[in-house]
Image 1: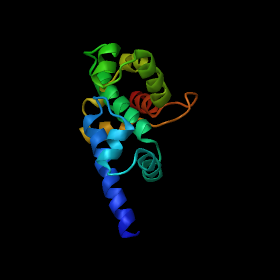
Image 2: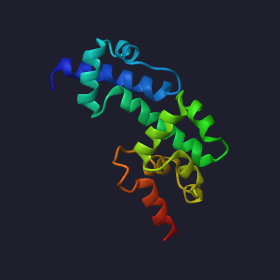
Image 3: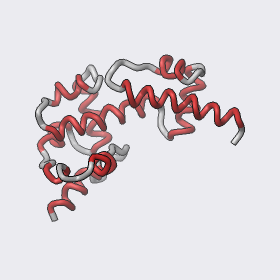
Image 4: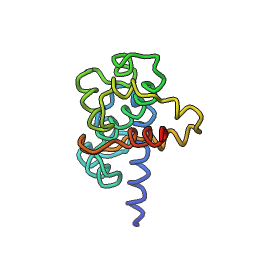
Length: 150
């Protein structure tokens, strides 16, 4: 890897860290690109090449990941979770959640999550990490929950 490529990766990590930390506030590609010291179009191309998804897709995945955590707690409504993770449209949030997780936020919230309570937080985080998959495929969440009941 060239020194320029290593520098680009360091700048991209800064933008990714911004997304991970500030997922709940409005973020746009120009702001992320500014953090990476790149033009928005160059940033979007380099981010996708480095991480396999667009910056916006990565942001939404982080939001959905946090939403899963809040929904497992069960003390917030789906609307409250939607707003807490930085989404402004319940319909868009629900659609994206279903696309990534494989079930609606309400269905996910209604699941019995007690099997996750006694596991280390890192295990829960890895086991429930959202993945982009067609809705027709069973979700990793459902598979894990079903395996825990068996």
